[in-house]
Image 1 (cartoon, rainbow, N blue to C red):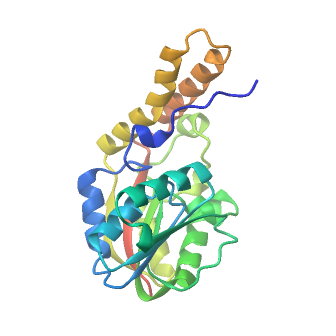
Image 2: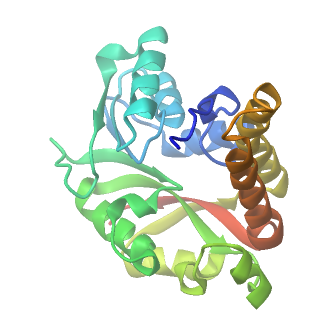
Amino acid sequence: MTPPKITPLYEDVTFHGPLSEERAARLIRSLLPLDDAHVVDLGCGWAEFLLRTLEAAPTATGTGVDRNAVDIAHAQANADTRGLTARVSFQVADVTEWQPARQADALIVNGATQVFGGDPLDHTVNALTAAKQLLRPGGRFLLGEGFWEREPTDAHLAAMPIPRGQYVSLADLVDLALSHGFRPLAVEQASLDEWDIFENAHGLAWERWLRANPTSEHAEEIRSRADRQRNIRLRGWRGTMGLAYLILQAP
């Protein structure tokens, strides 16, 4: 059976990740000034963070890249609505094959290091390596990346599809950035409230669909998928895996 189309995630959340309005505004300020700068967002989704960055920097331009054509179309529609069409471009592309026209003054990779490909154990290193090539000397890099807030138990790891070696501690994540020549300008992490608000909204689309389609032939499949995602969160990463927001300055 072909699975049904579920309401897009962006109808229930603002950012594609655990990020409050207050934190988003603070992180954007950390990237400024961006006068006449070019900002690149890789794995941008519907690019809400990129669009807000351009709104905060009226002379900056931006490029957003993502493989999800639906998200990119939504990003373009939002840019058009907010009068940003002339200053931002979006591309549906695999980041590993995408070629930038110029080096960026600021780079955003927010919860999307997987776009650089390779083994999950190498995602963070691949992102840091690519960022050095994509950024001009002294440019700023917003890296949103997972880390182990506490050592995961065997039970945690069994509940979630994340290998132990994919992440390190927050301190080790910062040291990894330092080893690639970056200087940390700010280090913070998503709060448990931000995680809960995001994950609740993420699951809302499934529950809304189930209430509207209780007799559908797909109901059991959708219910199973929603339950699996909730269990991964509650029995796996909640309180164990964190999301760090690093503002890094390129060498």
